[in-house]
Image (cartoon, rainbow, N blue to C red; front, side, top):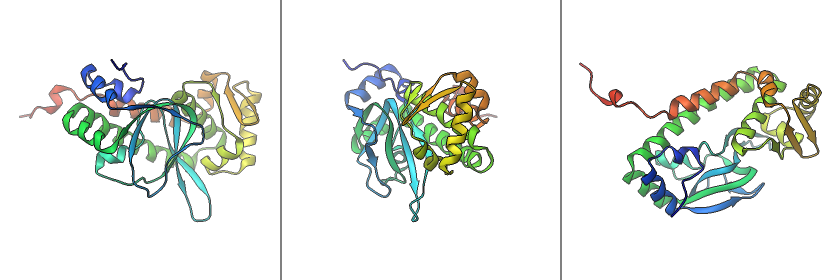
Length: 242
């Protein structure tokens, strides 16, 4: 019998629905730097990470790139299928190695038709992602590099389930849309405060609580958005009012 998923989106389903869904999934390894989707290509699978995380990246004609979302065990890759979309809007690349449940698109659509709870969870996850994207857009425009770096490291830790992240300064600079020197200066400040420790290609969070105090409010706001969106509606919410 398949074990209950470690993916939080699926774990919120009734147990019978979990078992039926997982039975139709492949259990795969998320290999670091593996590309799971390209912008504009047909979506063939949906992925539900159980550990590790995936970056969604927008690329410009001049070669610049910006990370617009990271997906870990709180969500799924390919949620646009739930809106009837068939193509990927962004490039998806594994930035935290781990594992995932993978299902073909046709099977996923069949489960959504048969399981209203699954369909409802996916719809609420899409809304949470939309709200978080708006918050991150404001964060990119108004918050300092050190705050944004702290926020990004905390988000990566939460999704990867580890304090050890394989991230280079060059990658972080590209994903946050800033110069590499800005990331290096911010990382030095956080390390001097005893919050992180970094070596070439790796960053370790030493003091998570302290790092939260250096992060902008967007870290807590994004978490709250997810929690609020993913709450199951109360029965009274669905009754007509007089």
